[in-house]
Length: 181
Image 1: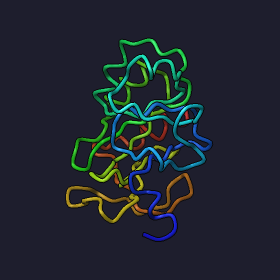
Image 2: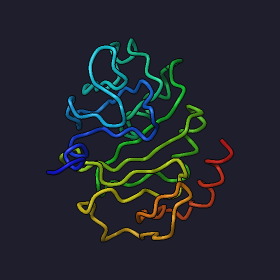
Image 3: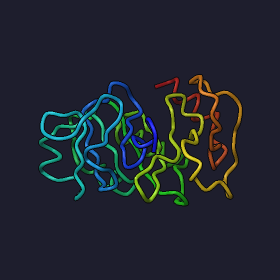
Image 4: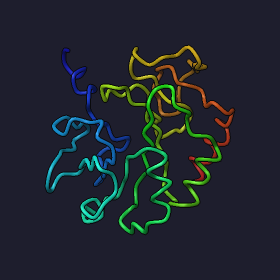
């Protein structure tokens, strides 16, 4: 792979720049390949906790968490006072995407912006939600698109890459909610 392409393979790419202290609760990412000015290890902004939320993750005091929907739902019962920036919901290709009900539940539980990411089996970023929250930008040609509706219009974030249209028709509600927050 040339240039930045290798960085996307097995790399966790945070939606915010600079990346805040982020606990990644899945083992899908190679610990030496983080993007957007982050790093790995003690004193770094992003750390992987492949076993999920535990005492080590709590001691890290993350401002942001990247995890599966189920892991984040389990965290609704845990007080994490350091969370101040974002929830990043990680999914595999073919899994159900977040519905407006999911987003509402997460907003009520955490009062944080929510970013959705579709991750391939190799840890590659396949699709990612931007700060405009108007669908997921297609990031890789490896993303299966057979069951998806693509929006090819320019995004409010300024990017012109195709986006996966929200699956439940809630794009207007999401767009309005993003600006309200």
